[in-house]
Image (cartoon, rainbow, N blue to C red; front, top):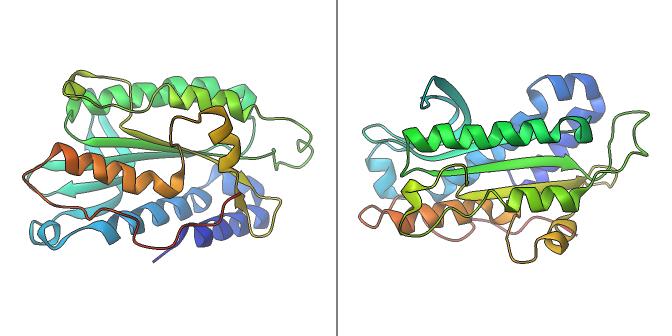
Length: 234
C-alpha cells in the first residue's frame, strides 16, 4: 500500500528528473492518484466487495452536460459513483492561473452534483511551498489566501445537502516543501489560515468516507479510521 510519505518522495523524484515533463505529463500527479486509490481500497468492507464496489482511477462519468473524466472514483456496478475525487497539482504560474482553476473546479463540482447529488464529492489541490521552477524560486505564493478560498467551497452538509451546488463535501489543500528531503507537508500554514476547517490530505479519505457512511445508513461500504500511520508533516 502506498503511504503519503512514499507518494511525496515519488512525486519529488519524478519532478526533479524532468520538471517540464512532470508538469505537462501525468507521471507526477499519477503518484497522488495511486495514493488516494490505495487509501480508498483499504477502507472497502466485505459488503462492498460482495456488491462489486471498486475503486477506479480515471473513471469516465456522465456529468450534467457532457462526459467527465474524474481522477479517482468508488463505483457501485448497480448504483453508480459513491465517492468522486478530483485532483490538481499546480507547480508553476500559481498567481497567474489559480483564479481560473478555482472557477473551473467550482463548475466541475456543480456538474457532478447535478448528476450525482447523493455521491460524496471531494477535491485535492497540491501546491509547492515555494515555486520550484528554475528561475522562479524567489516568487511568493499566498497560501493563506488560497486556504481561505478552498475553505469557502468545502463542507457540504445538513439535511438539505442534496440541494447544495458548488460546495464540495471535503477538500484537501496540500502545501508541500519539495526543497526538504524527504518532502514535507506544511499543514501548519494551512491550519493557521483556516483553524476551524480541516484541509489536511492525511485525513481527507477518512473524512469523505465517514461522510458517505453517515448519509447512507443502510449500507456499510467503508470502514472508519485511517488504515495506517499518519504521514510526516510539519
